[in-house]
Length: 228
Image 1: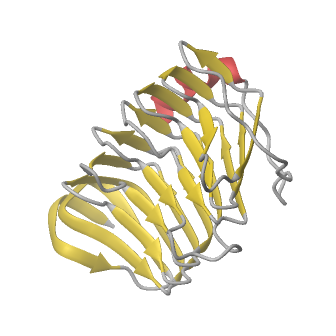
Image 2: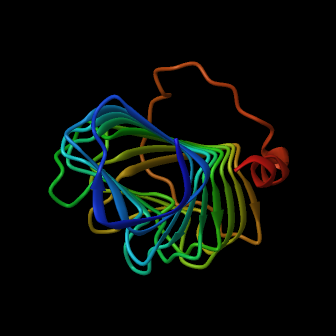
C-alpha cells in the first residue's frame, strides 16, 4: 500500500508477484518499470511525470494497470508495452496533459506476443497514441472515452492486429488509422464519433479469446468520467 507523495528518484523496478495499491498516493520524479517479471498489479496510483510513467518490457507478462491517473509525459508515451511483453490490461485509467498516451510494440519487436486489452480508459486531451500499435499479435481497444485528441486516436502499424469497438470519440482528429508505409490491420465497429474523422481500417482482426460484454457506446463518457 502506497500513500502520500513519493519521489521515485528515477526508474523504480517492480518485482514479480507484486501489487501496488495507492491510497491517495502521488508518485513523481521517475517511472515504474516492469522488466522480465510477471503477475504485477498497479491500482489507484497517481503518477506525475516529465517523461514516461510506466514501462512494461523484456518479456514481462500478466500485468494489470487499473484505476490510475497518469499525467505529463511530454514527447514520451505515458505507458509503453514493448520487447515481447504479453497479457497486459489497462483499465479505468485517466491519461491527461500529455502528447503521447500509450505505445504498444517497438521498432525491434517481432510479430507475436504483445496481447493487450485497453478498456474504459479516459484519454483526456492527449494528442496521440491511444494506443499506437506495432507488431502486436492482438490488441483489443473497447469502451474507452477519447476527448479532444488533436492528432489521432488509435493507429495500427507493422503488421499489428487491432480491434477497436464500442469507443466514444469526441473531437478526435482521426479516430482509427493505419500507417501508409508499414501498415497494420485495424477493424473498427460500433464506435460513436462526435466531431471526429471516420476510421481508416484495413484487413481482418479476430475476436479476442475471452468473454466480455460491451457497455452501450453512448453511455461511455458518463461511465468513464465517473470511474476512471
